Image (cartoon, rainbow, N blue to C red; front, side, top):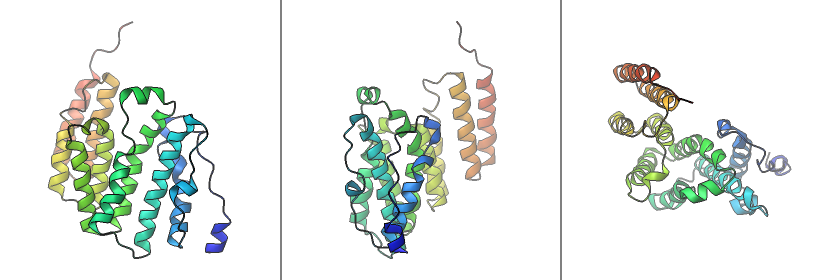
Length: 239
């Protein structure tokens, strides 16, 4: 199997993706291939798999696909029985949490930043799933790392509500206590409508209602659907 897989070429860099709605899907072929390769003993670094691009406009996609490969390696290590200790997990996960911190001016200058933003919710959900294979203690440590970034004065701005929400649902599925997830989901409602137009407020309420449903909170779901209905009656744009 390893010999056959070694002959499978790495996918082309996905610079052909133009819609943020694509999410992580265009990058899953690389994820699956490299998870198998690492599980079978491949030792290539992510920079060997994905060298820096000669085109500066493509470098952000290189960074995203390197992150995909790092998560694939984490998952494969667990398959091979190589469980991470606390220090190794922190050294591996924290750079992944911080690798897409960009200030507003940097974001505006990057042509493909919207592709990164669209992929982040599922990218970090994949990270949670990979770490879950290393045991419950590893999941708790990863959740603590997320919370530290979400609460930090200098880092909270880098975590949009929709990214936090997807991570919370992944953490719930991975075994983080219901009370912790409920508290965090509730806190998202304090800011999730800020700066949104009518369509944005409706979508935010709908996504939040779905999240409450996912963790078995029907009353909170009903409340949020009521808010969604209220906001849908708002005054729209005027020409």
